[in-house]
Image (cartoon, rainbow, N blue to C red; front, top):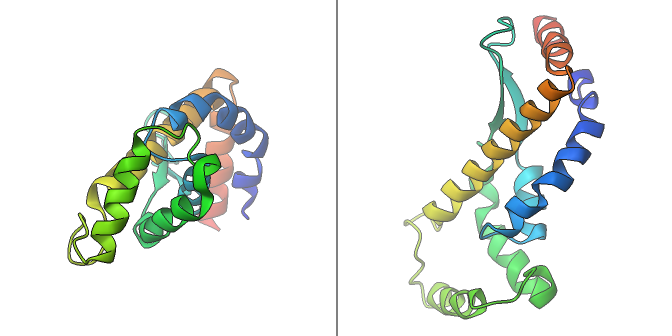
Length: 152
């Protein structure tokens, strides 16, 4: 892990706790969210410009884990679902459709709506983390560490 990312560990823990409500309101379980964030890299765009610098979620790898999200959901049972609800019926229907080859996703088997939702939530997390850093006057320090690291 890079030095600038190491600087974020405590802040990420704080934002993770604050972001829990947002994850629970989404279509993803906590386990699925964990997998999404494992596939997400955080970067800083325009790091050399203090005014334009922005923390962003690099979500390029999320597409590769989208099929695994269904596996996590089906293996986790009701506990993985967070608040087992009417979503259960939709999950069963989608599982049956998938088994019959009637997947709602594109020909590549990727559910594009789920991918877009995961990418959007990951970016919202990055924005929340940046707000948290700025509120503690830490974003500039992290931005400079990022710039120093990427220039080397």
